[in-house]
Image (tube, rainbow over all chains, first blue to last red; front, side, top):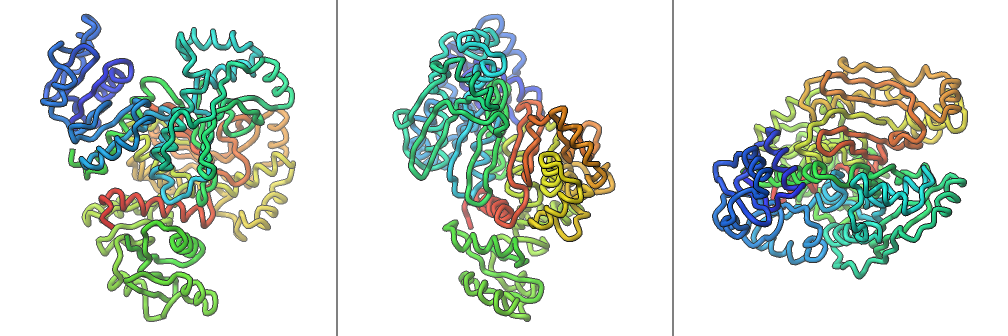
Length: 311
Length: 311
């Protein structure tokens, strides 16, 4: 299987490194970062590209644009971005999947291509796969859980160590769990985007971010967590999709400390309530470049499987 | 997609009932119980068969044997039993998969057929699927968890309600969670068989039940659980596969009460320790006819997907 990788930041580099180390039968024929690209249809020497990127900040030559790669590289699956070339696509990019799932799927179907996006929701947890295939035939009655590791880390620390929100946020930043501008995470937007992806891609709705009722964690007083704690409860930011009422909601909720969804630190946890399988819960790491690469690789190998091992 | 169902006990009936109720695009063309069978290549009237089974104890005619069904029914996937006809097979039967996985896979491959067995391990949890596809590309460093709901129920009750082993077993029997002869469950054999299936089918080993180091739960004194409880710990029957040492083990272990694998009642919980995705945990119902049917249906729909929606 030959793949072209557009994007050579932490995820792209992580992916290339792992594919280089592991004997998965996957060859990378093209790579591009925002300013350069490189193509070798016999398979790139990834270590050399890492070296070059390290030294010059570029992975290849400025003349090799993503367009050039789409045009002249030999690949079976494109990792990231556009579907226009009639090739299979694996993406970790939440935006296009959340905003344009129906259109992307239509283009993919018209081109008889496969579009996979496991990495867009809950990192290393194979939630998309489990819902699409592992629980196929089930009616999904509800999906709810912890979709954002940054918020979960902050709430865990506020609850366990009695930190204030500001202290916990500062700590999360120092550890690299929160970005300099944490708005996206702490306001619940990241979790909401993941709900939109699941609602559209798994449940067939046509929702946008505006359809999600969102409350973040930035206004939770430390007192609230301490009061909850005295009662053996805690607070978590829970995203929930209710297909019956067609509602999507992200909000802090009080949960018993031994509730399945009360996971520690940056973990994610999602429960699918189904008619046949009952409640099935998935717990794992929701972020990180290696975890994202894991999801991308599983998508690549799944596409190979689906196409009869042709690549 | 046309299917033939061999076996019309609780799982077979549950499956037929669900397929009859749900609009999954699956038609049942043949059904057999141990003494009779029925074929209609245009699709059976399942409600009529239920009625007949209820009244006469037979689902069809005595002349229609399983052999006859294999010979003359029109089907894409056989649910249960033998692979000899060059058809795809979905089974919930642990024995053949645990004992003969390599041979069965070889026959399936030679006939270009698909063999799926999601229902053999942890009922409604799509663990086989998640390990084969959702976490594809990962090196599995360890698999461990609660594989037997009966033992988990007994241990939960001993821990929470301070019942003796005998009291908890009696209760489990009354509730239908334990069979009249509970040996298979409480001696750890059922859990061990599931480990053998995962070791052979997911990790490529060639293990048998004799390779599993097994300790059951029948010799755990109530004191042990009460002592553990005072220390905020409890005991669970844990099955573990360590691919590095090639060891399989089922044994009672002391776990912190807030350990992810400490699930309540008849639930199952399994953690896969991987190189890329980290630890991923799956929690759900491990048994029950509807849950088993859920696993079988997901396998059927997956075969349809893999064969390009041809059925």
